[in-house]
Image 1 (cartoon, rainbow, N blue to C red):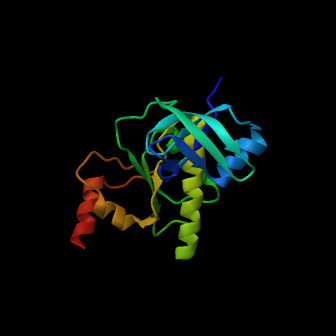
Image 2 (cartoon, one colour; image 1 turned 90 degrees about the horizontal axis):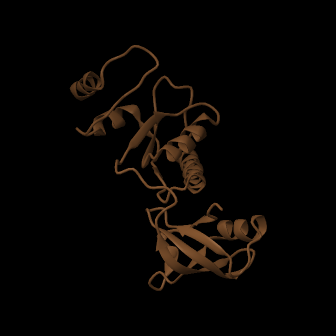
Length: 193
């Protein structure tokens, strides 16, 4: 049987990891969709790599209390690599798909990149915040579905120039669908301006 997994932020774990409270969204999924009852076994993960075997102690439509039985190995092991994916914004729901698949593949950070010639432009800070919240929720759902106990962090959209200038000396790759410059040549041209 597959694990019935629920997300609970680290702040939800109370009193030395003996109990935890699920958010209202997770509680509704537990009670209305899965129709679980007190005493049923579930698993909760904190998004930072820890997963726990739990039993439902109390349940209502908007809240659920879980009793922590034991810390367990996550359903899927995490890569020791800390991978960041910086990808240009895409039209429609294509960026949502990138977030979902990158999460399933083990990426730890996702950086949306705004570019000069792109067709996609975010209107203002409120639009940025809404999009990032949506992508973070997609990353959470993909982590739950794929068995990951780590939820990737989705950054605020950054300008391409900022991404290039902040790139460190660690290994990095850049892919383009057209002919272009190497990443080191591109960095030099940005630093010389």
